[in-house]
Image (cartoon, rainbow, N blue to C red; front, top):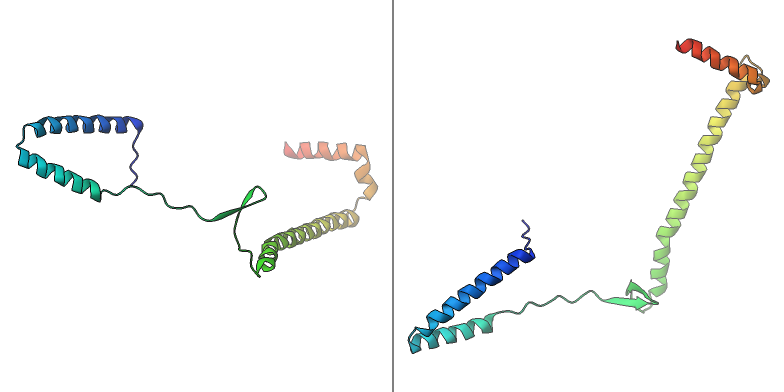
Length: 146
């Protein structure tokens, strides 16, 4: 479960902490000397054990020509790292070429099916280019829809 604290919640907590501190300070003045010394020693001991929050160091990043890159090292395998970085690019290019080839093949097959249907039809191919024939087909379709 996440706990989110807003600025308003923090200010309420700060005011509460200041109020408690003020009341404890007023009460501490009325305590006997030996008790106040023991409280002071306990307070110092608690502050000594208190941990200061530390930030984790960031990952090692090298800058290379204005662009941040992860350091692969400057050793013998640098050429192999560059070649390994080219493998995904080459696979992407090969996949795009394969998709383009398949798409061209499917399109050619569709066009061949249309051409064979036109050539095996009873109508001559010139009828499809006649504007009167196209109008005849449209009116015929409208009559069938009604």
